[in-house]
Amino acid sequence: MPICGLRVSPGKYGDLIENTLTDLRESSVLDRIWSGDYSVWKSEPTGIADRLGWLKITQKMREDVNQLQCLALDVKSRDYTDILLLGMGGSSLAPGVFRAAFGVCDGYPDLAVLDSTDPGAILYHANRLNPAKTLFIVATKSGTTTETISFLEYFYKWMSDRLTAGEAGDHFIAITDPGSSLAELADRYSFRDTYINAPDIGGRFSALSYFGLVPAALMGVDIRRILDSSLKMEKQCRENDLSMEKDNLGCILGAVIGALARAGRNKLTIITSRGIECFGSWIEQLIAESTGKEGKGILPVVGEPVGPPEVYGDDRVFVYLKMVGDDSRDDAVDVLEDAGNPVVRLSIDNLYDMGGQFFLWEMATAVAGWFLGINPFDQPDVEANKILTGKMLGDYARDGRLPDETPVLTCDGISVYGKPLSKNMEDMLETFLSQARPGDYVALQAYLQPTDKTDRALGELRTKIRDRYGVATTAGYGPRYLHSTGQLHKGDAGRGLFIQLTADDVQDIPIPDDMESGGSSVSFSVLKRAQAMGDRKALLDAGRRVIRFHLGSDVPGGIETLTAVI
Image 1 (tube, rainbow, N blue to C red):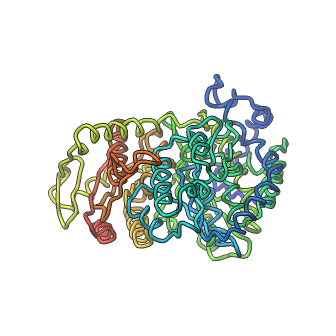
Image 2 (cartoon, rainbow, N blue to C red):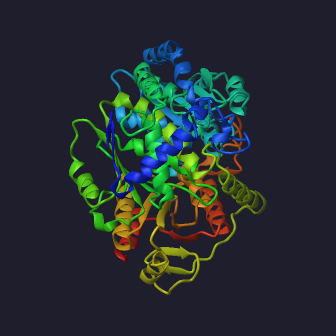
């Protein structure tokens, strides 16, 4: 079923998808979405009517292109070498995609994203950056995101200690919503610029707003071409004749993933050409946080190495994002299709097509939400972790320490926390993973410093789990994943097995109590531990299956030990 950059090989689900498109037409879903009709998803407007600004943001942002390009040229003329974006979730993922895809543009500063409260991750940037040559972007919709404000307090103090009085603020740009506390801080501390985003756009739908485009412009990406690509896709997604022969890619993709999820194929497995793997992380948050609620959910599986058909269950849908001219993964995808798996192929002509891909996936997610009968714009279960983390930090403020936890097993330098399932490491992990049933998934939650070695070790662990137990696997660094897949972990049907990985921090650094004083009542290590403990408690409260392995000081070695016993 080929159409204009999208080809669907439905396997045995061809009639189901055609009937699904008929349902879309007869329910006038497309017209209702474009008219801003909240009743597409729920009977009440709360959390929907004020979250549909993404539908029209492309044209609005086109009016600001010249302004953002002037900002970029001015920053370039000041010989900045680095930009560090401080943000979490929807405020940081799209900029990360742009940086990974486009690299360092000639003559423009390099952009990095800090979205980890791990002290090692923060010190990595503090130790490499030249304060006089660094610009910070502080991005948070609410203006109160704990991690982002902690980053700001630390790096503003770091800059103030290294520059002359009054210079620090000129090295900061804020992106936030109207009236947020970050906007007030930016004004008080004389930030270089503040960009007030449209308030009717949720974080995960904000890639084509200031949150995505200010960083992209500053690193030298031609944002006009990004928006032109998005506008072209937007026009395609207005096409009312919904059939596989037409080119409304957003509705067709949404119908495919929504209908197949209802049919039990709810593990949306993303395969990409080399060079655009980064796009999968953005899709992961969009799909997981939008659909994982009310006991339902589509699990995005990103970064899992492609395997032969026999290692997959019958709960998979494969989406292949292919750069035209890169055939390196064609054969592997063909084998999966030949085995009867539903496969969706999306062709990308050049990197600027990602503007259209952002809009395509946003529309597809909204349409899939209609099929699932959920509100794709809220995140009702995210608050549980925030509350429990706050309680942990309250205990720390009162007692000077976090609540005690006692391991049920210590072996080979690794301590295990959870139910006492066995008396040795091999049986402990085997007993936990043997709970997996068809349709389940295993999520690795790594409260560790992100490094290439750790990435590789996690990849080997998840592959070993998938190949032995035949279940989908995901891996995410904490607390980053809390703003990405954390909603689905607690809001779906409870099909996850969660392996939490923690370790000793080699160094710790204090979080300033505010942007001026030298006092500190909590450190980044304590914050990270509180977030891990809070999320584990939230998962257990939701009836999820959780085990924690504390790896000590040798993180890659500890992960390799777990891999070896499977």
